[in-house]
Amino acid sequence: MIKIIHCVIFLMGLVFAQTQDLYINAGFRKMEEGDYSTALVYLNKAVQQDPTKAKGYYKRAVLKKMQGDLKSAILDLDTALFKESNYTPVHYLKAEILEGIGKREMALREISRYIQQNPRDLNGYEFKIDLLQKEQLDKAALLTAEDMVANNPDLALSWKTRGRIRESQLDGPGALKDYDKCLELAVQDSLCLIRRANLRFDMGEASGAAIDYTAFLSRYPEYPDLWVNLSEARASIKDTLGAIRALDSALLKKVDDAGLFLSRGFYLLTQKKYEPAEMDYIRALDMNTEERALALFNKGLCIFYLDRKEEACKDWTEASNANPPVEEAKFWLKKYCAEKK
Image (tube, helix red, strand yellow):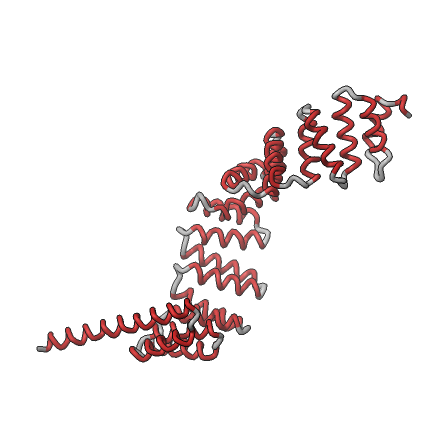
């Protein structure tokens, strides 16, 4: 008989739990439809169904937050913690609400409690770091990221987050190590890849930057500025043809940039590809480039090597008379165009 009573009580508990979840699910469906008043009816029923559990109060607080009834939402959250002190989602939601009403210090305390009880939830760390950075507490933000890595060394996001913070605090070598680890754990992480590429580029690690830009752009070719960076990185490691190919790709996306034509024209000139180089300088000049004098001088070089000396002298003359003048143009004029003076 006693066993039967225990079974009945156990089954009644299951029914209550299932019924509360049914009310909660119905309430959230109405929330998704924008019918907040009906949603509140269902969530009130969920609380009434089992007032000893934190879940109902917490879910009702979510709705009240969406409605803007923040004071009432906090009351529900406090009640939820009173009913079940270890119901940790309360701390996260309460931190969000407190941040929303400008009580950032209290929000930091709540999210810290959440992290302490949920060290494997990276969202908590990210939220806390954001709060600390808004308060310009950079050292505390880095310490939070250190905890994030220590508790989650197997997750790429941990290393990516700390790398981002180290980078913002001008610790380039430390950030690079974190991005390396991020990519070791998640080879396809495009954000870590492009951050490492840009950091390597800024730190003068041209070879590594070129490798990273190439890998990123093979997947996401629609960024002309990154093709330009790749071009500069290729040029830095004496890969002029690679630099030209990168600018070819950049110009497919950014056809109205005179600077790109000037850069490609220069690389083509160094490769003795005079005709395409001349065309690039003509395009740049047609766009009224601010580097008009330099474009004229280099265009003159192309024309000279194409055995059109008279035209070259005309370009060099204009370049030498510009303000400021291209001093090298005067040398070429003196050497090859003396009769034109």
